[in-house]
Length: 137
Image 1 (cartoon, one colour):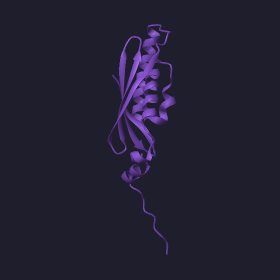
Image 2 (cartoon, one colour):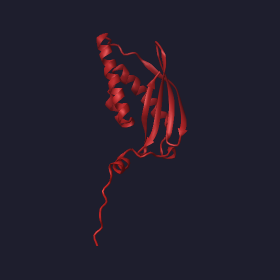
Image 3 (cartoon, one colour):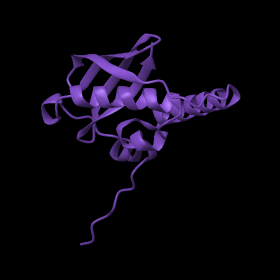
Image 4 (cartoon, rainbow, N blue to C red):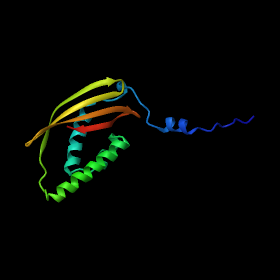
C-alpha cells in the first residue's frame, strides 16, 4: 500500500520554516549580547561598522531599518566632512525578562558630548537571542 503525501499549505509552510520561539532557560544570559549590540549599533550609526557584522543577531526588518539609518548617517558625515569618530563608553546594562523568551534591555552609552540610552528587545528564536527592536534615545 502506498502512503500518500500531503501537501503543505502556505500557512503551514510559513509556520514550519519561520523562526521558532524558545524558552529563556535554553538561552545564555542576555547581558553580554545587550552590551555588544548597543556598542555595535552606535558604531554603525557613527559609520565605523558595517551593518552586516550584526546580521545574525537581528531580525530582517530590524536589519533593513539599521541599513537605512547607517546610510543616512554616512551621508551626513560625508556632507559635513567629519573625519574624527567620537569615542564612547558603555555604562550600565539593565535587562528585564518581560516574558519567557523575551528580554527588554537598556544600555547607557556615554560620550564626551552626551549620554544616551539604547533600548533593545531580544527574543529567543531558533535557539539564540535575536534583537527584534532597537532604539537609540
